[in-house]
Image (tube, rainbow, N blue to C red):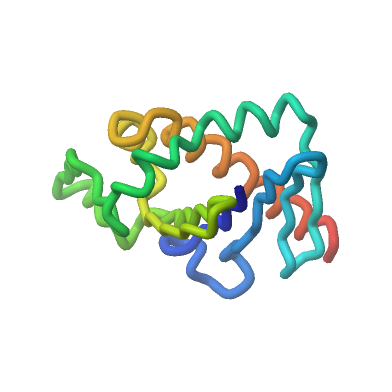
Length: 141
């Protein structure tokens, strides 16, 4: 299984702050790469197994391509907008060649967990990996 994930929108819409990385969960050599920065991280077999279990392909492939938060609470003092939030694109490519992409906002881990068990946990994992990639990019400057 290969997963391409990206972060965009919100303040990350600025040049250099978007991320598009690949998580290759192939047997024997699981790895995350970000071609834009040269970032590469090999996953332990334990972490790779945990991440694999976060993606239930059967339910993931049934999701619409764009998901919106169910409860967007906005007030005049603090408006909430999808445009103000980071967006995460998750593209899963299965070993049999099927591909599906889902876009969700950064605040949707609970909703994703309900729609596709494990996907909310994957969103949390992905956000942490994106931060690690950004820290790597800062160190490269």
